Image (cartoon, rainbow, N blue to C red; front, top):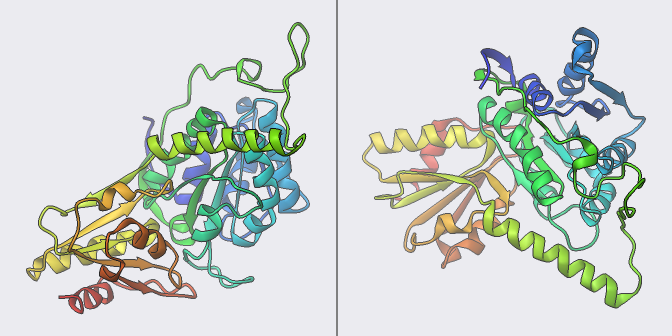
Length: 352
């Protein structure tokens, strides 16, 4: 790991991406993600030895397709956007998934629908985890809860994207984006493979057979086989890349479930409930796809309180993961409202 600094979430994440070997950033300004392209532009100007390139596209649609071209040529590339921009990129996400392109997309969620507000929210869970574009495909989706984890998962996103040749979405939010915390920055990636050494990259075919990256079928039989190969890849991801943390499940009667910034509030509420003698535990999903169903095994008979900054989205995955969906209660807030630990404690008391 590198030096310890006090840094804003967006800027720390951008620095982590640079140290992961992501020299190409394509972006279009949209709050609350705009500090990421600003940071890349600053590094491009102040640290020319890093060979950073930032290009501002005319729209997010352009940006997503720029990323597809860059990663097809074997380069690490990314963008950072928010809900409306992520929506505009969904056609390209479907194409990148079909083409097995290892793109990394950061989405900094804010309240919707439409332009909404510029505050913390989690209403883009469905769009990120269900594949917002057309066809049958999945993105890996990782949800950090601290600036430190934001940096660590940023670097891991590139590794996972290239391991599976699949898009990865790092799902942040306005609270984490603007939060300043002490963080230990990761070191620079050493000995990163050259573009021409990476699988299927389009670097010219002198001396070898041409590589083919395709998004078009040649009839129903061939395209079904193509899709079945993709589904096999998604199955391997679901088997091997589940991530979550659990707290005090050994004796818990009530289990909180929360992800991202809201999980910080719920951890504090859990501790307060324990001080009152209530046996409360917690599950924090880190991979939202694949969803950590295994975290809920063996918890029959417990009560679950799912807390989200939306009208109820992850709660559907929780209900699919437990034997009795009637054991699951939902508490959500909208519009950028972030409850205090005391408010969550009040919801816990209702379940006693």
